[in-house]
Amino acid sequence: MHRHQHITWTKLSLDLQRLSPVEPSSLASILVGISAILDPQGSPESLSRALNFMVYELSAMSTDLGAESRFHLLNDYFFNRRAFRNRSLADAVCPLMFQDLVFLHVLSQKMGHPLVLAVIYNHLATQLDLPIFIVNSAFSHLLKWVREGQNCYVDLTDHGRVVPERELAYLVNQHCSGKNGVEADSLEILPGRQVAFQYLNLLIQLFETGFYQEKLLFIYNMFLEMEPTNLSILSRRGLLYRKMRLNHEALADLRRYFSFIERSQASPELQIAFLELQNLINPTPKGNLPSLYLH
Image (tube, rainbow, N blue to C red; front, side, top):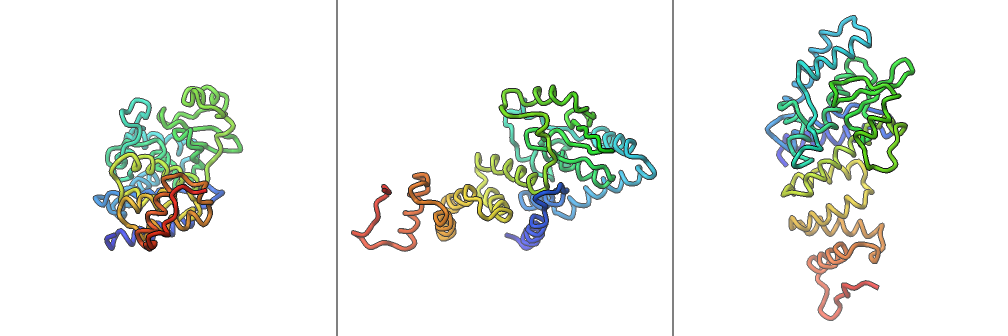
C-alpha cells in the first residue's frame, strides 16, 4: 500500500469506528476514502473538494429559505443542474458495475447505483438542515423525510418526488414484486453503520465475481474492521489469502475461524484448506497425517 493510501486507510478506520450503530449519519467521507483506494486516479482531497463545492453552491442559494423551499432547491440542483440519475439495475446487462459504485466515477458521470446516489443526496440534505435519511436496502431509491412529525418519502428515481405514505404500498409492490416479507412499514431509517455494511456488501458482490483480488481483500479488511467477529467474511478472507499465496495470513484467519466453529460443521472447502495450510507451514511427519474425512 502506497503512503497516501495508508493515510487514507488510517482515516477510514477512524471514520468507521465513529459510525453510530443506532443513529443515521453521512457516509460521504467514507465513500470518498474507499474510492480513493479502489481507484487512485481520484485523490481524497480532489473528491472532497468536488463534494464541498456542491455544498457551497447550495448553501449560497439557500440563504433565508424555509424547509420546503430548500427541499425544492436541492431537487432542482441535484436532478437538473447537476443531472444526477440512477443506473437502472433492472435493464443493465450487469446489475453491478465498478463505475456505478465508486465515488470518483459517480461524481464524474453523474450516474450510479441508487445507494451511492442516496449517500450523496443525504449528505447534501444534511448540509441544508433537511432531515432526509436513507432507509433499508430493498428501497435504496427511497429516502425518508422527517418533517413536523409527519413522515414522507423522497423517490430518487422520480426526480425527488415526495411520496405520501398512502402511495407507499403501490410503490413497494412496484419495485419489490415477488419479494416476500416486504411491507411499507419496514421503511425504517438506517443507522450509518448499516448503510456502510450495505455498501460494502455491494462491493463484495461485484469483486467476488471478477478478477479483483486486491480490491476484494481491501473490502474484506474494511468489513472486519467494523465487525471483527463476522465469521463468513473471515473465512472468505482466509480462502482469498490462500488464492493469493499468502499462506501464513490464510492460516491465521482459518485458525481464528475454527476457534469459533467446530471443524465438522465447516464446509469441506474450509476443512481441506485448513489442513493443507497447516501441513504446508508446519509439516506433519509421515505416518501422522490426519484424515481429511473428519468424524
